[in-house]
Image (cartoon, rainbow, N blue to C red; front, top):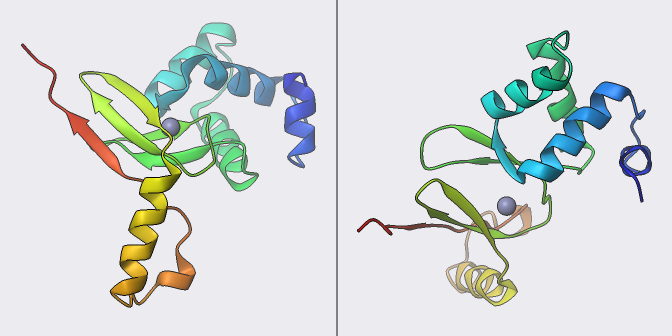
Length: 133
Ligand SMILES: [Zn+2]
């Protein structure tokens, strides 16, 4: 499936600007808004910051991207919208797929009669690794 088809399948109109942002995200994987804006403007300097924000917001609502808090305090956009965990190592963000960990946490919360159990949207564990020598 090409970029235009992926965007249309998510229920959005496949505009050139949306295609530019989505293709950039497939290359970046995880990215801060600053990096996305810089990348988009490299290809098309006329795209406004508010347009980029609107596109990213529409992608999150349509399930094409997810948004997460980085330990550095910034929001990051993620090309993988499904439930997964992250490893933060130096300046790298690594996806960590571990359905057993997710199930373990959900079971633990169930045993503890976690008040919001039925309302859990996603379980996302963030693991910071100190790999400096
Ligand atoms: Zn991720």
